Length: 495
Image (cartoon, rainbow, N blue to C red):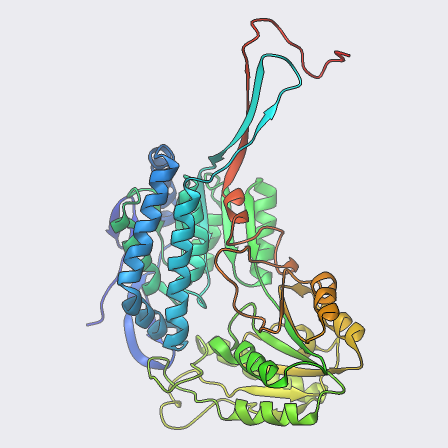
C-alpha cells in the first residue's frame, strides 16, 4: 500500500475534510508512486486560516531575536537532513541530485540569513521638528500570509518566503505545488521541530483552483506571496487589488544570454548549456534565448550542438544523469507543441525536437535538449516562455541590437552578457531591462542574500531574498512621544 500523507492544520496532522487524496508520482518513472496526499478544499483552507490567526497572536509576541534563533535551528536541521531532502525532491520533481542538493543548501543559507535578521529589523529614530518630542519607526508583522509555491525549487522557494514571513512575526498558510508535496511536508516537519509555534505554520495540500483560490480570496489573509505563471499571477493580482491585500508576484521569464566577439567563448558555451538545460529548462531564469553577435564564429554553434546532443538524460537519482525529466505529462505536451510552432515559423532545428526514448527513458517525461537557429525577434519562439529544454538562437549585428532584442519581450527577469569589455559590461547593467544581469556568468544562479525578482510581466515590484523581502513581510509603524507637557501643534505654520 502506498504511504498516505496529511495536511498540518491547527497543530495536528489531518486528512482533507473531504477525505479525498491525489497521487504523487516520480516524473522519471511514473510507475513509482511516492504517496497519496490530501486533496484539500475551501473547508480545509478556512480551518487553516482560523488556526493561523491564533498562531499569529502568539508567534508575533515572541521576540524577534528568539524567532531568529528558531530559524537558525531550522537551518541546522536541514543541514543534518540535506541528503534525505535532496533525494526526496529529486524523486518527486526530477532534477538531478547535484541540483536538489543545491536547492536544499539555498534553503539552509536562507535560514541562517533569516536568523541574523532577527536582530536587524531596523527602524529609524529621527529628530522631531518640535522640542521635547521623540520620533521613531519600527517594523511590525502584518498577520496571516498565504504562501503559494511552484514545483521547480521545492525547498528553496518556500524558504525564500516562509523564513522571512515567520522571522517578521507573521503566521503562514503554505500551499505547495501539487507536484512536490513530499518536500513541503519535510520542510514543515523541520519548522515544527525547530520550535516554530504549532499554529504559526499551516500546510494545506491540493490544487490551485481548490486550495490556492480560496486562500487568495480569504478576507483574513492580508498577505499573499505567489511564484508561478504570469497568467495565474494576473488573476491573483486582480483579486488582491480588489481586496486591498499586500501581494508579491514572481512570474515568468524569457531570458537571454548575449555573446560578444571578445568573449571567452568556452566560458560562454558552458554558461548557455547550464542556463538552457539545467533543471531541464524549468526555471523562470532559464536561458531560452541565445543572442549571438554575427562575428562569433560558427564553430561556437557547432560546439554547442555537439555538447547539447551529448547530454545524458535519465533519472536524477542516478549519478551519470545530467538532465532529468519534465515535471509531468502536461509539461511534456506543452514543450512538444512548441515544436510545431517552430516548424510553422520556419526556424532551423539543429538538435533535439522530440520526446526522448531509449533505455530508462520510455516511461518518464523526457524531452531532448533542443536548439533552433535563425529565430527572428518578435516571433513566438523568441517571445513566449516554454519552460522546457528549448533554446532559440538569434543573431545580431552589434551590442545595441542585442539590447533591443533582449528588451523586446514582455518579461524582464534575468539576462547575461559574455564580454571582456568593461564598457559593455557596465552598459549591460544600465541598459538591459531586467531585474538581474550577469556578466560572464549564466542567467541562472541567484544568491540567497541578494534580492531576486524582475520587471514588467515578471513581477509586481517586490523582491524575494536578501534584505528587501523583510520589508514586504512587515509594516512600518511611526511612533511619537511628546514629553514637553504642553500642546505642541505639528503641521501648523509655527514659523
